Image (cartoon, rainbow, N blue to C red):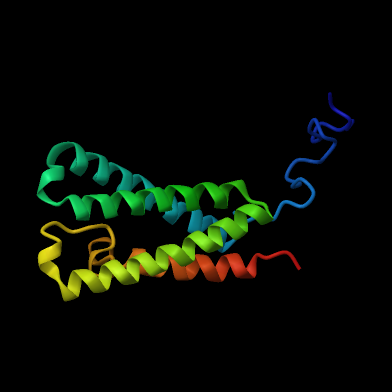
Length: 151
């Protein structure tokens, strides 16, 4: 039941655009671009992984499994950024750090031992197939998430 009287009030009595108490807004300014980029990477990684696993998994199971992990990470970070709130911000921050470790590990591994990867992963060569967005995105994400922390 609405407690506000104006046309702009919602069911909790807040004006349109107001956030619930205690909810850190992450989708504003640079955060909006971050959500958009993570959303695009989510769609790309999920689509690529679904196709590769369903049609040719036996050719490069390690590469396709790592691409699947990347897809899950991208979807989770996108969700937490859109959700907002301090808990979501912290979860996204931890996940961005884990993503960066994954990109650096897989990127290095693909350069040191290319025979282990007969097919590329999303994170191969630090994301060269995705214009290095996979290595830049978690760094940018961590910077934004630290900046958006509640004072």
